[in-house]
Image (cartoon, rainbow, N blue to C red):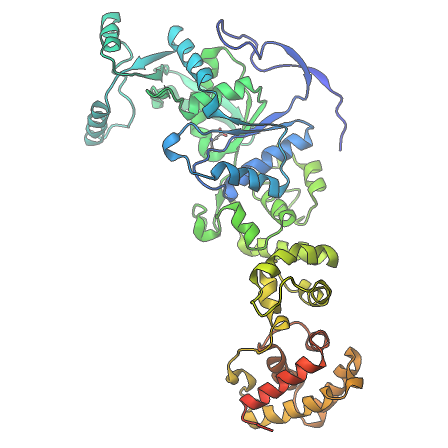
Length: 510
Ligand code: GLU
């Protein structure tokens, strides 16, 4: 990590309008990089949201800066119960710690109101009393005439008399920004380069609603300024809001932060990422047995890369090499198989003790009731290494290992036979295996393996057939970890019991 000595930095806007909070007009000893993650709690945080959080966090940590959490909860109608907690839990799970916040915009309403009023007083904004009915009729008319949608500026140039009348009517107005009718808004996006919007395409958007709540635009800009955000790094979908934001910065006389709009995340079919592709809430990944280290690595590569080949990278390596220049301009593809592969790779690297500790909650929760609780730690320590190589997620482990934990196996008799193994042959193989499993002195891995192989040869079975039928008898399934180690963990009695039970299924009663 490169050491950056603290230095004096000018904070936020230089020219603070009279009558507004002065917090920004001072010099402070502090880091130059200040970024924020500003989710709206309108749902549970999904992959896209968390990738935005991660990139901001990485940028802050790389630059020894500050990462701020700000909850943009001013859309009361769309607020989802529990979403704030889920956002914070998701960040914590991935280890994305914040240095300041969480700030809740709903607790800062007076600040936005004050700023909206200042804009009105300084002729950058105006009150609008248009009724919902009038706006609806306006919209219908625009559709009919095939005109672009947008407010028709009805209240923009009301005379003082008209304003006074409307104010006296008791109808609570909204505050709209007075967008210049001509000209262009040009800004440089750190990822996309120069971006330009014609002001004529922007309407006089609402900044403050009639209930006193700010819209996203107002609250976002005011807070980015007051919180002295140096870089606004956010999802691509906000790009078209940026010219409006720049207009507001100009109206306030504030310095513009840098902008970086992150590439979209698409599904493998290149359509917008949806639940179908796995864009579920981040907590679901946790429940599905993905581990935060793998998720962190995977998300970091959604739109950022070190080079065109390195996939597995530690947290420290990613922090070290995370720069905006390496963020891609083109959309990232969310590939669930890659996540599974990566998760499996992280799981295999883990020490067996660590692995056992992480998988335990999944075992407690998902193993059948036949596995006595609390689970026997010593027994688990023998079982778990047998699947560590195989499982891609921790949640798979209980179902890969449930046969270690129960008395009677439930499986179809048909599994014991196959095209090359009719019932008579299956009986022959299982009887010979039982003879090998009987003597206690045969019970070590090497010896069992040797004796069973010799039996297969003697009876002219392929290994596949011989071990196949034994595997079904002992585990109840056609695929399992290596059979002999499995049997050694299960133990002599249980294996013999299961082989006998398989023989009974095949009609052998003795
Ligand atoms: N509240 C917005 C969101 O939910 C934040 C956009 C921004 O970062 O400016 O994504």
